[in-house]
Length: 146
Image (cartoon, rainbow, N blue to C red; front, side):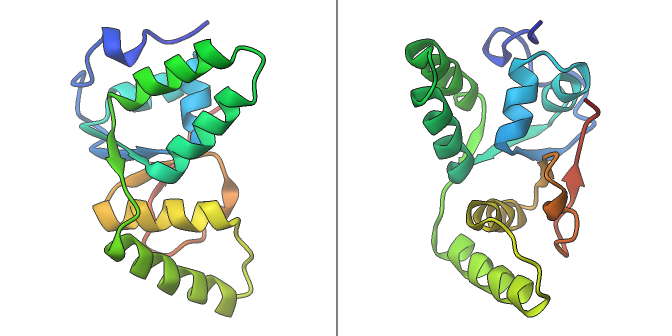
């Protein structure tokens, strides 16, 4: 089962979720048809995607057995998002966040620090099931049930 593709539906269903950024696992859950993930994405007022997430999704598509189909699906999905690029402001947030996580002794995957910094920069909640995001100060995390 899959959700109705965003490019065939409307993102303005209820606008209850506000500004939401997707992690790669959120996009995968959406593509797999997880009802709660679909609802959260479809209800977002503004849907962001950090460029690092776009890269992770493209890598997954290119490394899959259905490369062309999966890459096309990723590109179709990203067309419905506002890409958050890694600029000077995101880089400064990344550096400060990485220093803070190091000081706290909380190892976090490198890409995920960039993702958190991008979300913080645009003021968006991050839709992810990765637990290590939960302890990042000033980052709102939205999860869904399996």
